[in-house]
Image 1 (cartoon, rainbow, N blue to C red):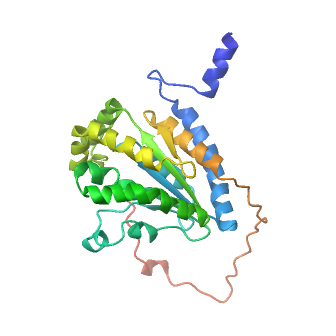
Image 2 (cartoon, helix red, strand yellow):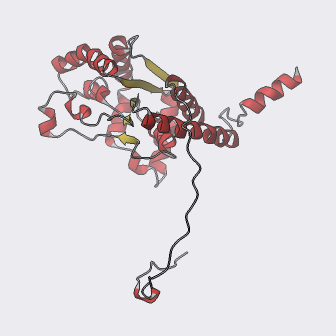
Length: 274
């Protein structure tokens, strides 16, 4: 019996607070990032189009997992889209139009840090869209996503779920930490006062857009480390891929004949402060 307990701890070691052990986390993250490299090389080779949406409450950890996914990848193959407030021209366009402009070409992965689901979340709760625009979105969104999938795009949707206690803890951390203060906005304060409205909006959104052809995958995000590992592990499991074999590369010698470089004193160097 004792050996079973020790085996369990060895697989998922925890801190005193129940969070995933940092050393174990980084070891597993490195393994997963190696697989992500294989995946994005396979996407390039097979000319796939991959779209991954990251949604959830403020401070749920979407940006953290996106950062860990892209950390070791080629930004020409895997890029992040995080759109700001729409311009007046964009507001006059078909709602999905500005998102379509950022969809991947063949051989690309695009990660949306918030997406067209802004209409069903913040726009609905904050009153940035009217009832007609909101219900039109819920009707047309499943058809829009079905069109993407039928055209050959791999579309994956993640919802990061965080408790109100954990969100408050992260908000306070952002307020107190000068390096994180930029993450906090007046909209975050407003979202706290409208917790129930956001919950209702999320549930209604799921009722219309959690479809068989394009389901939502919910990530329990109270533990950031577990959330990142679980999300990346799942992403790797839903996109079939193989390792792309590469030929061994040998570095050729440098041919320095016939060229004399100018004096190094003519260059302006950055001061050696460190």
